[in-house]
Structure formats: structure tokens, C-alpha cells
Image 1: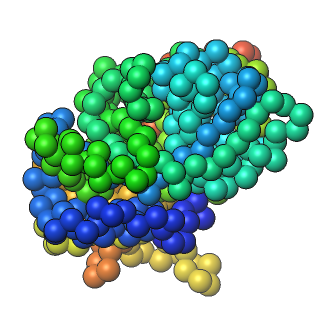
Image 2 (image 1 turned 180 degrees about the vertical axis):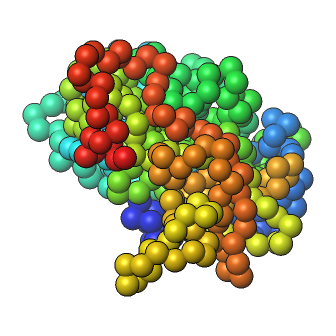
Length: 399
């Protein structure tokens, strides 16, 4: 259910979890290679996780540390988030953007008072990039993935003093300085998803899981975690991000971007698209017709029915319609059935039933709007005079 060819995903797992030796474990693939997809009963595992009593092996994630007295101000200057005065044991999320505002790295961040911890899916590349950006500042960067592993818990709490380093997922609550393209926080389906990552010494991974199992928490796989992530409309770097992604398209201005901080790489694009509106693409959740027992693969084409599709010779042909996007995550939810996240063109009608290509045919898909089709945030600056004309023809923002 993941795209192993995605450039953000390492081609082979860095670590193979010892928990794959548990009876019934079925290995995951793609971005989740190295941990279990499920342990024999994915439906029961999803229900346990949704109830708030389960533990998920996330030891395939990477961990980067930054130490030194300049670490917070330095990360503040490089990334999309305001972390210059981040209090200890307060979780946030940040992006590293390229000069054109495209997403390069995504990391959950928490500081324990002496060390900043960054958890994500591109640890080697992120650590290497940060190391190149140190210059004369008093910071040290280390990829500590070989020493530390992550366990996920459905708990909505920060780590307390004296407890292990813990990153609490802020999604989907709009952070100070952030904004939203989708529904209000109170109406967001992700508001019910509790998720945090607890960092443990890698040699203690099995022991920490057994402690939780002794308290009545079953060990569950990534099938369950991904299904609940899709339900929560939660973007993930290895799935929803490609080389053209800007944060607005995935509603990442909620939790990972501070609009009023100082300059950082890619900030001009972030500000321009926020001010003008209409990012070129938008994230959508799809409810897939499961009656034909066809499930698309990640990367499958999403099409608009009835739209003419160009042929190789340039003529227009009827058929399944023109491609307007691609599937980024596919999951089987224990209540919703087959669901997916997809990235589609902004101007796709939000009420249209779409078609998704599958091996053996196509399936119909109803949309749940994650990023509004107009691409305008509640705090978008008011247009002034002639600046309002021609917004839809801006070369960067698309039609």
C-alpha cells in the first residue's frame, strides 16, 4: 500500500524490527518495510487502536538530534515553523522547503531542554542537509536512528519530565501562526485521532512493547495505523509528497507552517500562495466503491468521468475521462471500507464522483473535501483593487 519508488523513501529498510518474529506477523512493504503490516487480525487491531488501547511498532522511522546552545534559533531560521522559544517537552511539526517552496523534509520536533529531537522518514538526508548548514553556529547534528526507536500510542499527552522523549502529533489543531484550508478544528475528523511517538533505546524495543502488552494493550500493525491516518486526513511525507508538493495542497499550514515568522527558504512561495489563494492541487479523501472487490494501487490515476482524454495523436477520446490526480495512500478501514487519500487538481469539482484506475477495471470514488476547491483560508488578506483581477491565471497557481 506504499510506493517503494517514491524518492522520499529509502529503497531498503535500515532496520528489521525484532517484533516481526511475533507469531502471525506479516511484514509491511514500501515506506513501512522493516515493521509489521499486521499480526493476523487487522480488523481487531484497528478497533483496539481506535478505542485507545494499543501499541504500534514504528521503529522504521528515523531520529535526528540537534544539540548546542544555538539549536532552536538555528532551526527556526531554516524551517517553516516558529521554534525559537519552543518550551521543553512541547511538540510541533516543521518542514524543510526548497527555494521554490516545495516540501523536501518533514519532521516531528520536540526539545527536552538540552537536545532537540526530530522524528521523520528522511533521517539520513535531513541530518546531512542540516550538517551542511551549520556554518559557525554552536550546534551538532547526529542521525541516532541506530540507537533509538519509536513506538506509537493512541494517547493525547506530551511526555512529562522524567519520562521518555515523546512527540505528540499536533494534527489537526491549527497552531499559533498557522491557518487552514479545510474545515474548522472542531469539525475535523482527525480531532478524534490520538497519536504520539515514544522514543526508546533500540535494544529495549521488545521489552517496552511487552510492558504495554502486560497492561492489556495489543501490538498492532501499520494496516491499522494507516487506516486511521486516512480517516483523519493526515498527510505523510512518504505518501502524499512528491517533487511538486507545496504545503498548502495538503492543508499543512495547520500544524507545520508559521505564517508570521521571519524569512526561511521557500517562505516567498508560502506567503504568495496564501495571499493569492488557489494552490494548484488539493488533497482529497476518497470513499472507494468496494462492490467489485477492486482496490487501486498507490500511484493509480484518478479520473474525472465524462471529460475527454487526449490520445497519443492529440485527438480527444471518450472513455474513462482525463486524469486529474493520483492516489497517494490506500487503506481498508474497519468501518468505512476501502478508502484512499489522493492529490487532485484544484479545479476538479468538489461534488464530482471520480474514477480510480485498478488492475481489472476502474472503481467509482466519492470525495470528502480536505482542502477547499477555492483554496482560500479564513485569514487570507482581502484583495485590493486591480490585484483581484486574473488571480486564476497566475502562472504558478494554475487555472
